[in-house]
Image (spheres, rainbow, N blue to C red):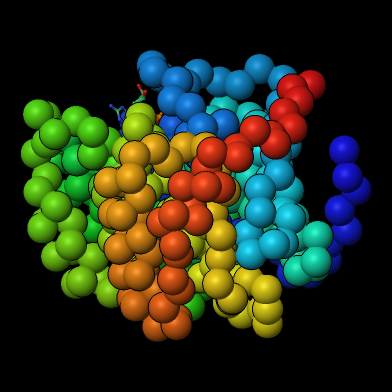
Length: 262
Ligand SMILES: Nc1nc2c(ncn2[C@@H]2O[C@H](COP(=O)(O)OP(=O)(O)OP(=O)(O)O)[C@@H](O)[C@H]2O)c(=O)[nH]1
């Protein structure tokens, strides 16, 4: 395994929050492993590491997911040339872990707030989450509101427009995702990294290539392209063009994952 040097001072932290059961862990696992594991995640026994390499604009980055205590995963992205690292923390949604979650807010640069499109209460609770976020997080934190489980259209109770409206009200980015199908999971995380990475000069802020396993059909890729454009418009960053053809080509070359479980 490559030894990748990075500067601890440039660590960017992202946290996933939202009610219990909305799919935070599933979304992170989908991004990390390109798969969906149905059923509830229980307490992780021991410590696991997964490493894999993907390419963002010719920059090789190493992903590291660290599973620690109950439902808490850390995903670390270490840029080999960028000299920075990104960590994505998955928090437990249950009330009893809330004080632990608060501690993570303080030094996070980005936050993914999830609700479940089949659960009215999880959507209603996002307002309370947002209040809490504003209380504990940094003022300039990047927030994304995510309506997860978009694959369950027959059980949908929250219309997309409701999510969009709430996001507009709070001035945050909105996307619907599915940890099951992988819909937008990859682009979501990569986009977030790009948003966070925009504070660095090249290569993070240049044109990017996506190389990941979780995105499927051409239709989804078209949708992905549109969503990325939307994200960048929302974030005030320059529009980044992603060639669907190039993306398809790269997706077919997947397979360089280096996975290890201790
Ligand atoms: N159909 C469908 N099911 C999902 C999706 N995401 C998560 N689930 C299911 O929803 C349940 C809860 O998912 P988790 O990922 O454990 O939710 P969580 O938000 O991490 O929950 P806590 O750790 O308790 O905060 C599991 O049974 C998942 O399989 C999705 O996108 N689609």
